[in-house]
Length: 111
Image (cartoon, rainbow, N blue to C red; front, side):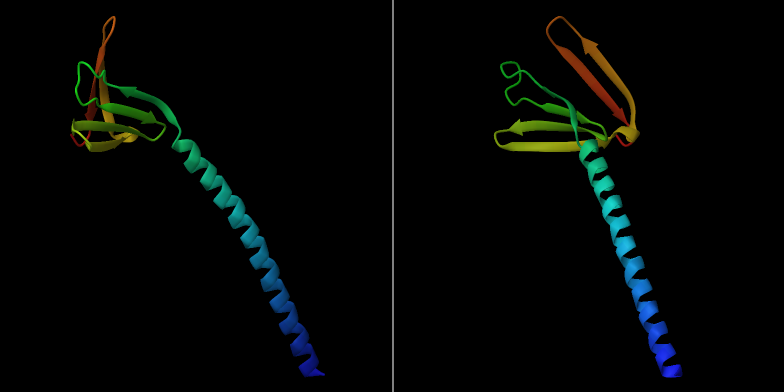
């Protein structure tokens, strides 16, 4: 009789572990999907601005999304230098606007 009780306890313990593991797996998949959607929404591009070609032989580009600002500087054909700045690291943004063109200066904590 004690062996039978031990087997039943063992089965119940295993079943309880499997149920809790399945519950955790379901919770993790919900959390994973939520994190995935947050990551995807944080990479949404808000605006992309390019330099004008005739006035700049190798036009630069600024891309702003929810989490960072990316500056792409082109120096020569097929070469570019990318600099990404987190929005938390931006200290000041100076803009100058004219009737046709504008300038932007980004002041960061690191440069």
